[in-house]
Image (tube, rainbow, N blue to C red; front, side):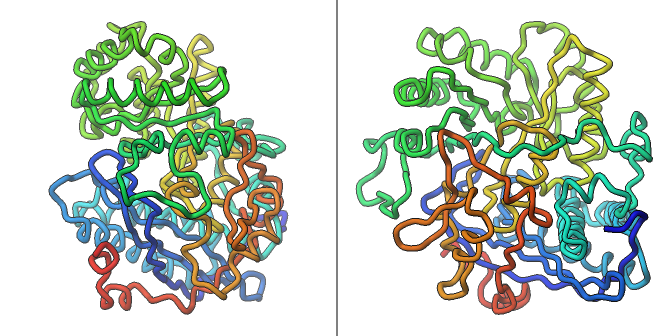
Length: 495
């Protein structure tokens, strides 16, 4: 790796689509996910006169980036593809001449924001395109230098100006919030969707999943040794009271007594008063008395349109015993977390789909708030958009470990069967097992899936690999975006 900012050229960027179907429906908020396109981004760079390939990928789930119940899923996916394709256009245009990573990503973000404002794309959505560009470029550079993410981010080769991410940081010093060394294992926080079966009795006749992996919550706890949980709720008090009581009963019966949980508010409330009534009713329910003290925080209870309303400052001050709340979907604009913390929230989340630089800036913001307000307990949570391996899962885990996040929501291994989404005969499972014998293990039929032991996943191989993994699925045989659309797109996949 170089001792100074390292320039490169962008020769080409290619997009391919892998259609994926879930093992069973995953209901989150207003959506029920049964299928989605998984987009692969391949970049070819010229680095020091040599051609190098970088990759990233991401599932494109409807109803998360724009939570509009009236928009058809096909239009939501079209919006995601539009912002990604515009980011590709910008990266190809500005990467023709030698550039370095940080200035290029900053330029892309500025121009993408301007373009998005003309096309009514909200920040959380348009930044998806930028996050894919920064990850694919970063992967190529890590591959070129054969260095892991944590080493590259600590060095000067990317040209990062840390003081621009947060004024408390010095450009010539490694940020103090980067874990050194990054964690060698992370606890897995298991998602419990709104319709996930808790026991075998909850599975309708004919909908059993017999694929060698646990399906129900009680089976997952026994198989994986789970001790952290994320529970999705609807905002309907009586439905949530019944659901949470049932979930709590299964967890108390099968999990370790020191379990912890987070609740996902799914943007169900328009103001803090309505949320407070809901929470206090649950918190005072005799049937939940032994469960609620295990709740660490509640994620995004307010709809993104009202989550950062200035009036929340007084509402938080008038509720000193409020649970810890964090933002997630409302973390779209730069500075959103700063605003949230000033209002009274306890933190935010990192997921790679929101961006590498955004994650670093948010970590810096929380570090500064911890120093200024030692009496408060701030949170940077690790969340998930059904990441699957080998690429997006490992890239996200590399960032979570570097940011010092101790437990992360993972659900891709649960809603998808290991690496079964890849066509037979292309060797993805075998290559992933060879590269990550700690993170993955082999099922009897040869398929690779996450190796979860006592609720933890081991990630030494992730931290040692260039940006998460050396595995490169052969994606050239997959359809391009245009070909996938001509084949029927999401409509064909959901049909």
